[in-house]
Length: 372
Image (cartoon, rainbow, N blue to C red; front, side, top):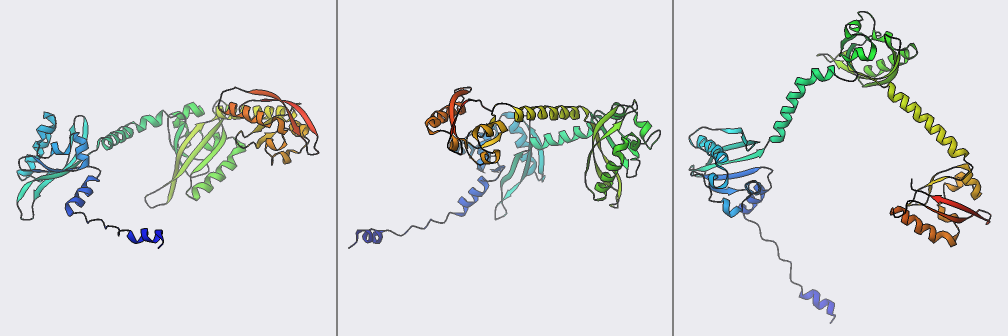
């Protein structure tokens, strides 16, 4: 008889797991609740608690059951819990309430515990830490109180305007003067000058067309343009606005803010000039320059001189890794040096290396490899 068949016939049937008791299932449920749950008898002794409660108290489960609050907590904290227990037991249905315990906010719910025969057996309830929520509420309150101060101290201008071709301003923050040289009162309701007149003439039509297109589609408008200040200075600004609907859902005004980005524009212009200079140096350099992915060996970018030295086109090189045209006798040394470079054990390395051209000829080069 086949031994394998013998072993299979000797297998015992898998034992079905026993059904857990209702009490065990209930304990599993309350142990996984994200707040503390407990039950006390009429004398204030704990009859049942969940895992979260055990973690909060910091005592073993066996030491909690049968203990009172004074045996588990500092006196001040215990008195808070006892007072609420007495309120419940005396007939005052307290339900939800909040309390500060040791500097932390707690939300609790307490009620009478009645058995299935209608007999009072104690109190039950749950609690959770709401310190984070209270902090958020305080932060919101502070935020609301400081909103006016914040708006008045923005680095740009907060505004609200009518949706007309003058951008008639109905609100401007104090930053208006610093940005435009005009006080808010001079611009509000086109008192002395409209905001549209501040926009450089070469931008007016383009900006207004884009702005009206965006607000008509109930979209956020986002534009960059030049304004001319009271002193005649030209400034680049970034303006962002959103449409405002009235109570009937009709488009009434727009609001947003305007920020001076002149310095940013100058930096970008300088960066463009720097990139142009680098590109010229890179492309016109009399030596071969290449930027490669160290892990794959494929290039990111090479200059024309690099391609000329290898006798290949730049398009051809973009589909090859450097190992495919390196001479096999220097390949291992090259790989070893690159590994040292990747591990930051050397800052760079230089070596004489041979490359193989498409026609089979060999060209000797001296190369310097540095991390990029």
